[in-house]
Length: 225
Ligand SMILES: [Zn+2]
Image 1 (cartoon, protein in one colour):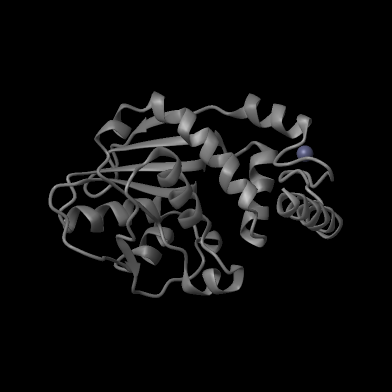
Image 2: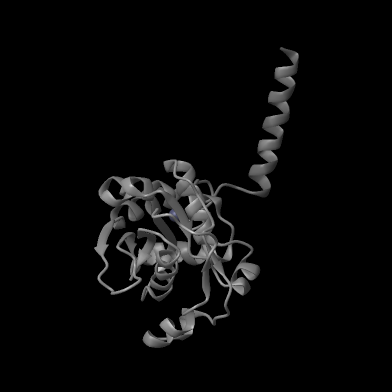
């Protein structure tokens, strides 16, 4: 019994120290005392949650279907994704995984997913930020929804940041820069990304995965503009 009491004391001291140095704060607006979200941000996020499916008719190589969780013009979602890039918020992983598991019931394709992978960032970005948010999201989603996670795509070519480019230049920038990590045997792959804008990266990844033998490629992203 004494042992338990001691542990209890130690834990509460540790907890109060943690609270002092790392106070819980809202992952969206930073208000102290809330975890993972303050009431206002929680409400705003629930209201803007708008899972939508897109059938992709982009021609050869593009994914078969895409599911996005939020529209990208929602300022709160945009800020959270930007923060995620700059900080290592485990809470964001939790929050977006929660919404993704809710959206799962709305997309029939989730039933036929054999394996889950992610669209890997540029090495420079990964190095600068210290993590790859698409990978964190994909791994958390797999843990929550019991899908096998696999690093199926390797970034072997060089590219510049897509932000500075438009339309056709984005396509050219990503052309041939990914390689499949292994041969696929008719599996259906779910490709996870955080933000899909023109879809040039996702399209190229889908092409590579299909060339490697994937039957279908579905995309799950947090925000799509
Ligand atoms: Zn907040």
